[in-house]
Image (cartoon, rainbow, N blue to C red; front, top):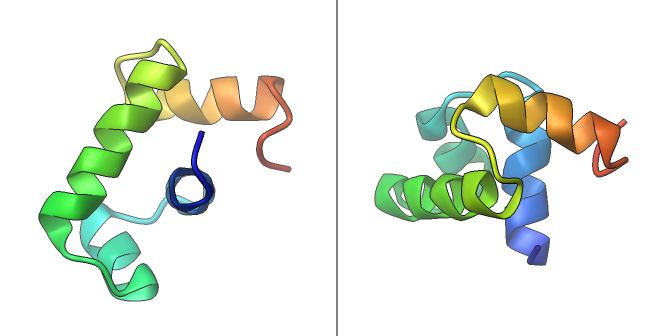
Length: 62
């Protein structure tokens, strides 16, 4: 997972919306959506809530 994807994942786990993530990281919404899509694929999940669980299980977030 790239450094940016990890940042996006941590913000997803903090229950931030795509729009909020874009504002925080100063990236455009389509870019956020691409990162989220890549994260879901890499974690082999289909939902943000599943990504949150997987991230904690894999110690990617606290």
